[in-house]
Amino acid sequence: MNGTDRTGLRARTSHAQASTRHTPSLTGPVRTCVGCRVPDSRSALLRVVVGGQGELIPDLRRCLPGRGAWLHPTGDCYDLAVRRRAFGRALRVSAHLDTTAVAEWIATHEQTTVHPRHTESGFDADEHPMSTQ
Image (cartoon, rainbow, N blue to C red):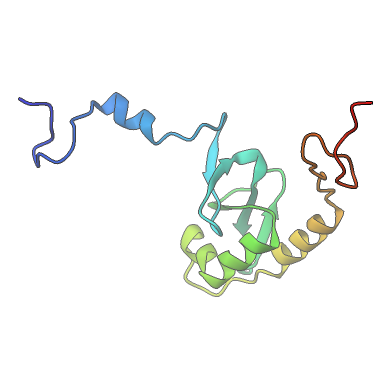
């Protein structure tokens, strides 16, 4: 054969090549955020499970039983997940879910997290070029 697939549109690839083509460059276990749908390492995401009364519980140790949904611990991803009703689909629950515990944890976490200040190389804190003197 000529090296294309049966439609004649794409070059044929082996299964080994196809499986490595879409693999993220992250090390360790990778999960997808239910809010923004971006894959990230498990350690960067918050695991959320359903409690007995239909409330979402942040699983900080990542060991509670049951199906879990993964979420970046930011207000933006939380808002996207709630707006898209992603928690119910990811956790396979059709009943209404109470998300207040997750919202409170994210609000507290975002307030206590210190975000590093990034400055461009060659500039000091007040954005003046560094002197060579």
